[in-house]
Length: 391
Image (cartoon, rainbow, N blue to C red; front, side, top):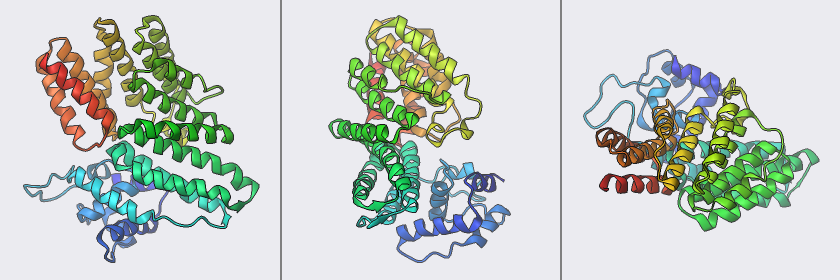
């Protein structure tokens, strides 16, 4: 059963799932919840197929699912106002935001910092990263900023050498999320110093993979702001051995920067490097946690965006851009923002090429996906799409 497989993939017992769900639901409803391991067992045995809405929402967070359907949860009777696969995703986002607000209260830093404190911080960051991918930076930014303030405060606590060595990595990852969600929410000036904080902490930690993630995300903002030289400077800060997925992402971001300048030769070279690197990814799930979100759809979307920028800069159509964006738009991924961005850009290209019938279909799909995501970057892509439709 999908539900049980998702639970086992997370390494959680039925009791642990019940405890996390109960905490989320009680934070939202302000009432005691009776959700327990027996309830989880009944779901896994098929005795309960469509739990209460709050339970479904919390289960999706705990088990990292985009929709209830991904967990095998299906309504036996569907009312006219409720589809079994998508129970008001925007409402779900609001509920999750309220839950996170209650679950992540500000707290004074401990006088003694332990490894368990680092693990707890990392777990909270993971929850927020998942919410960002599903719902966009606007839903996450304030929570991430509050967590980052608390994390920086932990540097004043006494601790062991091992914990002291682990703290910069946790801060770097949290700074990356805070900066990224700020950028995604359109808060560019706020994002830039946060990226720098993350890069500083990442260098201190010495994890080149984490540094790559930070540098490429910072470079994406510079590309969004049409600053290719600054983007390449950030990408060039990454030096060392990287997992194949990270190498592919870095090459694709470099391709975007070169494309923005209209450099066809360098764009093609970087795109070939991205494809070659990703061909070496054998099992994404078994790699480092930070690279597991670098899916084929994401790399395809990045590559398609590079070709999209190049086509715009040179004024020449490239048939490959449609193929790359069509592949990313049709990918089976829970990352709604990735699909929405690729779909909007695909529609834009098709409008420019005069393929209005197909473009209209993708435009409608992009608007549907965008309804679940709060992202200024996505809003810009949709505006470009609408402009192309009017030409």
